[in-house]
Every structure is written in C-alpha cells, then in structure tokens.
Image 1: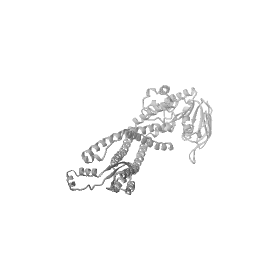
Image 2: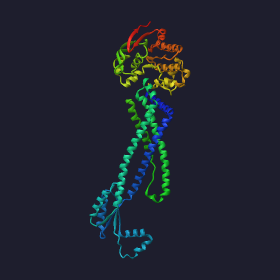
Image 3: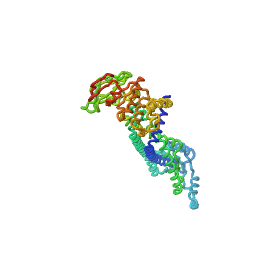
Image 4: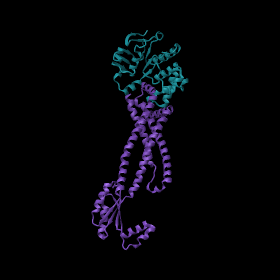
Length: 300
Length: 222
C-alpha cells in the first residue's frame, strides 16, 4: 500500500516536473525523436533490403545439365543425390522436349528460327532450387564440384560472379547494420543522458532541498526515471509517425518512378511486433540515459 | 536526545571551524545556540542533521551515532529532525502546500492524511490563506512560517532552527518565537541558533555560546 502511495506520488511529481519544465522536455523529446527517426530509417532500409534479398534468394537456382544418354535408373539416382545435398530445397527435372518448348516460348515471334533443326540440341537438366541454408558463394562452388563429378552430369551453371557480389552485400548489410545500429544506440543514449542531466541541473537547488528534508537519492531520482521513460515513449510515437509518413511518400515515389522494378522488391513498414519493439526501444533509451545520469547523481 | 562529544570540524586543513565541542540537550528542552557571525553555529547545526561530516567526535541523536551513518540512514534520521534554515530553502516552483507536503510525501503518507496534517500545521503557523501561492510571492516572514511548517509537519522529536528570525522585525520575530515555544511545550526539543541578544533576553532559555568554534559558555536557564 505504501509502495503504491509512493508510486502515485512519484507519478504526480513527474507530471508536475514535465509541466514545469516543458521547454527542457520538448528539447529532449525532439532530440530523441530525431535519433529514433535516424535509427528507424536505418531499420526500415535494412529491413526492406533484406526482404528484397530474400525474394531474390528464393529465385536462386543451380542448373545441372545432363548427358544425352542419361535416363531411367541413373536419372533417378542423380535426382535423389541432388535432393540429399545440403542447401537444396527442390529438384525439378526438365527433359529435352520441355527445354525446347521453353526456348520456343522465350524466343516468341522468333521461334521460327528453330524450324530448321533436325534434332533437339538442348540438353535435359535438373533445376535445383536453393534454400537459405546455402548462403554464400563458396558453399555453392562446393555443391557444384560435388555434383559436377557425378556420372551423367555434363555441365553445371549458376551465376558465380553475381552471387559473389550478392553474398558480399548480404555480409556487409549484416555486419555494417550491427555496427551502425550499435553506434546510433550509443549516440542516442548519450544525448538522452545529457538532456536528463540538463534537467537535473535546472533543478539542482530543489534536489538539494529534498535531500535535506530526508529524501533518498533513489526517491529523488525516480521522477527523472519516469520522465526519461515518458520522453522515450513520446519520442518513439512521434518517430513512428514521421517514419510512416516518410515511408508512404517514398513507397509512392518508387512505384511512380521505378515501376519497372516493382517485382524485384517488397516494401513493408514495421510489423505490429516491430512497432511495439520500437516503442520499447524508445522507452529503453530513456531508461539507459537516466541510468548513466543516475550514476553521475550518486557520485555527486 | 542530542549528545555531542569532542566534535572537531575543519573545512580547510588549517581552518578549524569547531574545536572540541561537547554538550547535551535533553528531550523536551529549548536551547539557544548563540555566538557572533562565523562562530560555527550553522556548521554545528549542519553536523547535527548530517549535512556535514565532522573530522572527529561523536554526534548522538536519540542515542545513535550519526557520524558513521550511510546515506540511506542519514535520510532516515533527517526525517526525525525538523530543520528551519536561515534562507528558508523552499522549492520556488512548488506551492506553499506542496512545499510543506513534501516531507510527508517522502515518507509515503496517504494523500488524505497529508492534506489533513499540512492544513493543520499551516493553521498553526498562520499561513493557511496562502496555501496555493508560490514562495517567491510571499514576504520573508511568510516564507519563514512556511519553512517552520515544513519542519513541524512530521511531528519531529527535534527542531533545529538556524537564525529563523534573522531578517524579520521584532513583531514577526515574537510571533515566530511563540510558535517555537508552543511546539516545545508539546514536548519537542528545540535548538535555535541566533546572535540576537534581545531574543535571548526576551525568551529566557539555556544558552550554548560558541566563539571561534569553541563552546565557551553554557549558561543555565534563567
């Protein structure tokens, strides 16, 4: 009961502090909002790039061209062997006739060029759909070597060069993302802690008086903790609104100006869970900033 | 209730502010602490409510030596002592009511109880009409009454007052001294620092006289 009274008293005190120091609070909220917008922009950019990357990754495949004399039991054995390989999600067999049909479809009006052919020059093939487990070019090279030495395999094709770039980009995004995220987090915490310190300085006399009449450092600090959490939460809501506006604008612009690339990306705003996480992050930033300041207050 | 043994306090290595001060104040007693400016009155009071740490010596409040207390223990002991500061030390952006209520909020009193007790003490010091005003809107005498109300609201066993009538005219001084006399008559120990001879002569009580940090005379109550 006494604890609840303390909490209600601290909440009232926090609310009073916020009202009395609107300017300092507004500065803090704007600063945190700005940091969170930067943070969110980075999150949205990497999230959407990763999302598009997964789409491209879903299209990754390796084509195993077969010798013309492969059929029956040998073909089944090769299919089974391919399916058993790590990173192979599905295997589709395309026989010579199917390959020719596809080629005709690809040529379209020019398909008449094929009319003079006496025999089908296209080989049968096994098209391997690759899973997320096969995430780098070296693993694909290994798989190609393993498959390439099997009897009945004529040739293996996959885009080695493109894949190398693709996987480097993935690595860069993941490592760079962690570094940038860490850096932004640190910067934001320092900004929040400094704005809370400003707030402390503005009320240093009052804090001294509270100590003289029997308040503990913890009692004095709690409204600042709540204030930090409030600032973080409000800033997170504002940042989310700003990010959503920016996202809608950019998505509209991309669809209007780069419509031809529409199939290659899937733009998405934060999911409800990510939105909740973003709000929690704002509050955590407020708490982290406060904790740094509290250490300073304890030693003051 | 207050026992001080061989108390030494210095601010700089060579500037000794209190030298071998020893005295006792009994429960329910009213004692004047007097001496010229710079004699160490304020420092002695600050040591008594643990705002200053002595260099050596012991300070016993209600039988407990506060010189070795942790910060949390110091906060607790301060709640049992009402302090009236010469410069009032009121929070400028809290109303009269909220300044007085602060002490009760700190100890987690229920809101209704806080309202009741604050109102009662504001009436006692005669400042209830100003309950919703901010300290800068009050006169010196009114601010001092608020500071006294804050010191009294928790019914402390000890009141320490540092020059509470320092800048006030004699009429208001008398009114304020009457408040201290009243709380003393209710059993509260009062230790009041002043260098006002007229006050000492008007309100005859035991006097502890400090001079250059030394307790030079302990005059018995007349």
